Amino acid sequence: MLVLSACSGSGTVPRGYGSPQSTAGQHRRSPRIDTVAIDKIVNQSNPLDFGVELGIYQNGEPLYEHGYGRRDFGLAKPYNTFDGPNFWRVPQAPAVLHLTRGVFAPDASSIYQLESVSKQFTAGAILLLQQDGKLSVNDMLSKYFPTIKLADTIPLLWLLRQRSGFVDCSSFGGKHSFTKAYRQFLASGNTDYNAIVNVLAAHPFIKNPKK
Image 1: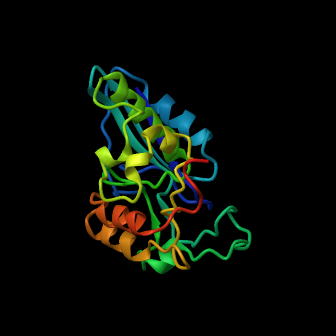
Image 2: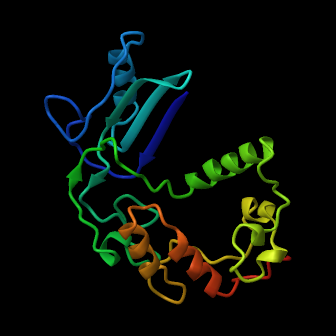
């Protein structure tokens, strides 16, 4: 299985890691595959040097793991465009959360925010869990998050269809701010989502979830 995850960015910097140009991370190689050809394909498909993590596995065994491009270009990126103005005047997460910025290569511990692409991965994971009999898309949200308002009226299927009425949890500043919650999330090493869930539970819906 091949897994690729990319984060937005731009610029021209040396590619890769675990190479003579960089010691930001390490990768594993297998004599069974042509890693030089794989590197060439990824680099040719990534002219803007987006951060890419690649993993090739066979029967659960890693054959090749490698990072390419940059996970951070050290530049604040406005929403919706790579180099245009911040049209929606949305406060930028790196500035609000005081994140360390710089030209960093990906390494084995890099964690990416996949933005809208995370919806497809999350939906796929839920469907796989349903396939294994571990949950049902008809389960009510209260089964997993009992503290959320009206959770006993919202099936997981509504979340997959984006019709639950929850506010956007990537909002920083303004009426529905998750700034403090994300600071706590980052402090936990990006593992504890409880602070974000608590803010969701406290906010009113932005629309009637039954519509």
